Length: 262
DNA sequence: GCCGTCAAATAGAAGG
DNA sequence: CCTTCTATTTGACGGC
Image (cartoon, protein in one colour):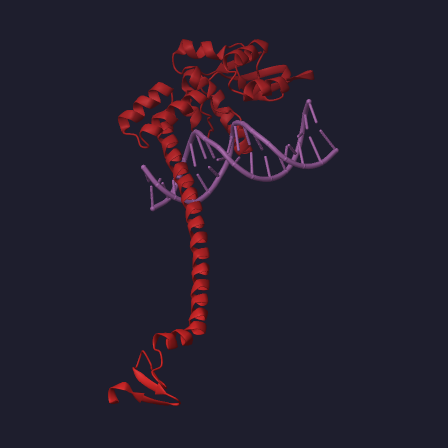
């Protein structure tokens, strides 16, 4: 006996007796699902690659098992289209269902219990979000649109946020968070660039400073070497007398007299 | 809205 | 070719 509980994110929770289990439950796909992914989402590099590697494990004897994975007999694209809830875009950027198990193993059984005890209608996207942090990867298309939007305005007003969220099949909160992160990372990069610039500026100023100090030193040396000659040239001796330019003292031989007194 | 932080997803290197 | 380890990217969250 097998009871399947599916939800609109194309999760398949399966309780029963199985003689096959997937190596990785979240990649529990049959051949035609794999083809679907390869055809529809070639740009999603990860899935086809992993699907080639991961396969079902045959058990020696049937065991009671609880499987949580993508629906076997459901075409995720068609399912979503039928339900008119989320487009292909949101299917591709789906949540990783292994997140909870990885984050806290103790929580995983509780999660499964919760899912089992609820009907299909109870399990919607928002509720799966709750409980633990989920990691979603935006598609290239979604990222592109967000980037373009960010180029125009780095902040969003509530209306723009709503519109963007709707067109990308994301929650407004996700768009908001994306913009927050984008702003923060832009700032970090800008700071890095400015820091690099300041560093170069500092280096240039330091070498300039050294050069100028050296120049001053050389000028001082030149001054002390050449000043006496210049001094005598500027104030040629009249007879045996010379005049000091600063104090106007006339030096004659070894004696000095003030010119004012003469 | 910003900031610091966490943690999943991913890429790439290293080793067998 | 596969696994393991490490670094980076990025979606999400809580506090302010």
